[in-house]
Length: 272
Length: 144
Image (cartoon, rainbow over all chains, first blue to last red; front, top):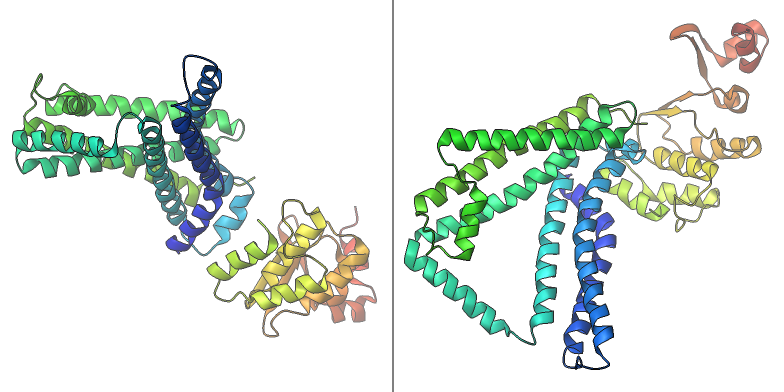
């Protein structure tokens, strides 16, 4: 049943994403091949226009991802479409999980597509092999520094990253569900709930970090990791700690937000 | 969603859904399966919803104010088309205010007032003992 829900969720959302991806790709190709044309003279204006358009599409891709994520949860489950969805022989958590997985999928695909489109534009200057070489160099140096441990650190970083997105999506779902409890001004109440949840999770997150005894946030470690560890060398232990802490916090908050959304959808569902 | 997509959706989720039944009823009521539900009139949308429900092979159908948005002339035709289609073993419970329009298809009636059952009877009994139609009796029982 979860698979079927996801199938229809992908069907309903791909109508929005596929054309956007296509436009982005086409625009980046046009941008790429207008590079040689861009002399100091006449071609400057259309090129500036093209790159501005490209940037706008790129930004709107991420805004669209966010809007689709919110509207699919709100419209499909909590507006009159909810009558159909909640009479289906599936559990409420199936709805949440299917929407979460599909959102996660689009967020990651959007990131990959954006990176690809940026690569297409810059491919005149940098070849693909150069990027691979650069990545290899980074990996090799990291390997020299941390040894085989690097696999574990990379895996932890990836899991922390995905779980982080997961938590954000679930926080939005929980906020919408909480906002729906309000009799009037549901959208405003959802915003309020989001601000509240966001503040609480931030406070809780920094409280646990001081409790464990790490004063730096995990993100600053990731930053040092990417910028260059030689200047501020973090030991693998600190990195492990930071990643594991980030994973643990994400898991706790994901479970909490999921429980909020699931409870409201099962026990307090009030369709208009 | 287009009607044929909704039919596909239903057959995916409900094992007892019979798509051929749905298409048959759509044809009888002159509804194009390629039409979008969004652009349909209220009455047509209600017809589609009723068709979708009645295309399942259930033992009990619960219909809350079916086809309220359809004109009275079409109501008869729709009801007979759709309700004749259901499984012989099944029971259909209809809650409605449009009594006179559907009373000829009813076997039993239950009158409910302020959450309490005020009358339970078969339609034949009402006609025999009261000599009235269900609609007339309803108007009498609930006289303001």
